[in-house]
Image (cartoon, rainbow, N blue to C red; front, side, top):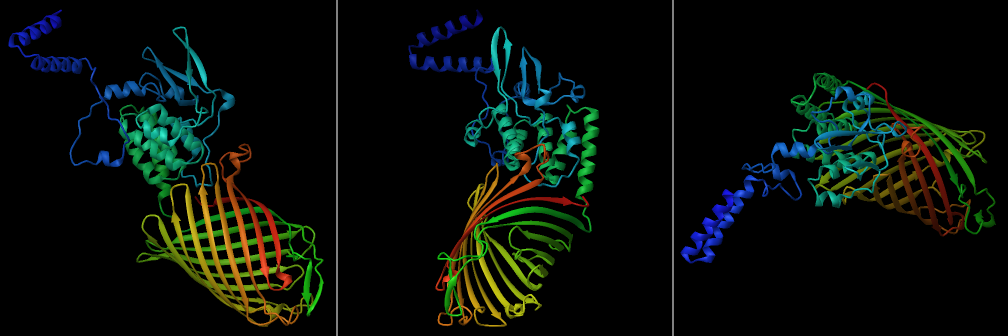
Length: 572
């Protein structure tokens, strides 16, 4: 009643002064003042948030109070002050499945048959005991179907993480929508896109600095993404939180000690790589298109088998250590066994030993190396190879990298009773390469390269050649897999006619090779076989078109391959 009487007094004064225009101003001011105290005009920051927003030289007023933030967080947080966090450790919960009814927190429990461990997309080294972290932090990444509840006699839908995927554009339009952002972070984490997950949670952590559940969620992702430095930073924030229970503080402290111990530099690190694979080759002997070939200036039939399958298995052991602040030295030993299904020309055992140094000089990243290898052929003479060289690269801006390299190779074969001409192919070659890598965006990158090789062979006829290479590759880092598509051209100019084939023609040919490579974690297809997504599956397709002025080398071949590999950190 008092407010109404005041309004009448204002209006009377305005009429007495005879100015309708001026009477509106105090009326609007009064309404605005009244709305301010009744929180009708309360506003919150809107629009996309960037790091620049928090680095301004002056302080902005905080328009949305902490009380409002906490009230809003109660709709989506994992646990609030009214929930006993310790008693919930035997259950698995979803952040977006928590909601409040009449200020009472309701926690929706995930069905037992749908519980799964948080999984990694690619073989990423674990820096802590992940099961222990999951139990401590209580971040669930299960896919659940949407649920319904009854509120005041009305059916309500609780969206689950299996709903329609949230796009990045939706996040840009609603950067402060907590539920939307949490679901987006969870979806990106399931796909192994930890960069987007961490970015989203870091932004939410800045918007809601008092919420310990967001910090715990962020910590769990940082631990899995092998980001120990960021993990230590967020641990410090968690330890200062008032909502953290003594038991949780003790557990987080243990995680901190584990992370710090693993950050302590080791003198040597040891790794093992194990892989198995199979290749189906649809023209294993490069049979010509016409099924004819030249032989000692005569044309004969090319009757070699075209189809065959090869099985390979390999084991690699690597030892590496730091040398100074900006260098690392590594030794790698590899054993590969190859067996062919029909023929035996590819039945081999190969051994290789590599010494490499990665270092930085000024703005140049340099990698000198030395490789010694031996190949035991079942049918042919044993082959030996000695190679040394250096590779280098330097950045040109944030997205471009130029690379270059030089290699010297000395290859020899020992003559034996089954191959009396093996040593005729002994050669010394020099090769140089240049290239450019470009990062178009987080999804797409490209690379282009060129090379030149000059081979000097013991028997010049049909062996000495100069090779010019040009290649282009496009890479797609999809959330569900890594895909790479390449196309390369090689021009071969020989220096002397091969009398055993055609003494009247100097061989010259060009080959075009197209390949597609797909890399995916086995656990994303069969979780029961690879629950930690630590086994990598590679699918490959290659097609070769060879055009030559001698019919022997005019052919088309293609092959399909599949391989499984796993990396072990032996002393982590």
